[in-house]
Length: 181
Image (cartoon, rainbow, N blue to C red; front, side):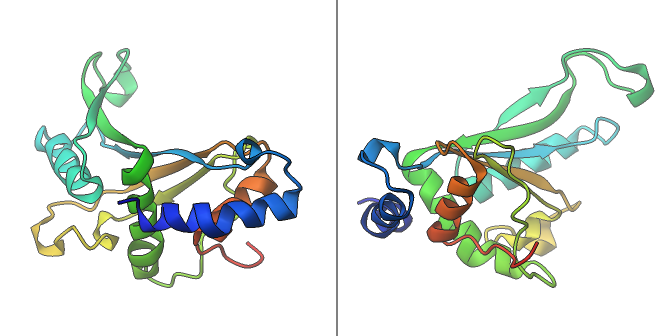
């Protein structure tokens, strides 16, 4: 069974985008390609910080993250080559649509004083990146079991050629964008 958000894309969003942007072929319509969720961990923290980030990211995404290691030593940051500095997960297909559905419907509204996400965080090629300051907004995380609050970056990679097309796609997919921001 396909994800609920994918069915919405196929039945509602794709025809609406074809009508609005006057696409002649179904394959020209922008779509989500992947979602990358990244948690950076300060290298100066204890060894268990990376393990905690991996555990939290696993419970949020349902996939085991890849541990990112530093490429070279930087003395001012007390960073050594090969030292773990974070972790990331790349979500595609059904898992990606399930995650986006949970993000838009359950996680984002749980942010304190939430008025919508900024519509100015596009990169010029139709990809959207946002930062989240706490992992506790996700219902999968038990707030009393976490040792430290950890932020994350979420990047939505689309096949849109322009920011306007990508914004239209993500709005119709259900992401709550703020008006005028």
